[in-house]
Length: 207
Image (tube, rainbow, N blue to C red; front, side, top):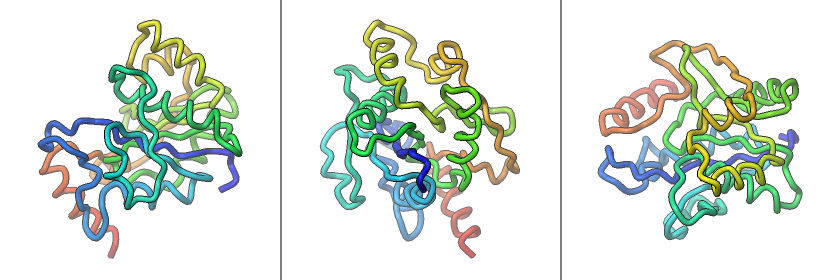
């Protein structure tokens, strides 16, 4: 892609409404949910990693490096953002930004990165996706230079909410993605019913 952006797929959730386990490894149709996310994100970034905790070998078939949360206690998605920033900070070549995406959202926009990059070039800070008036904090672009600030913030007991950290502390740009409510690119899979809906939509869009 050549934008200096690395993709970080966040797969650290507990999937309680799906009976636990890694919902990203469930089959969408021919491929897993995470593989579908990877397929949509790969053309937009220079390289990708997966943020997940526990035994990384369960993700070995994906061929991605797995980076765990760097802090001892769970910090939610913001801990995954920190994991991605810390990884990027020491990577060679070092990306200027990371883009985060949820592992359970297989319809993410094909122009996610370019739109977020346009916004962050103006603001200099993070940029967060929004659709139909709803903010999607997990889908955000983060300058790598924020790694140390975020680490200090979480270590000192600061908010664990992505929206509060990005918007209140760094005045994040909000980027609107137009879409039909029934074809929201940020639709995420939380329940067995959501999975069935996603499978049907994926089949329709593949024809």
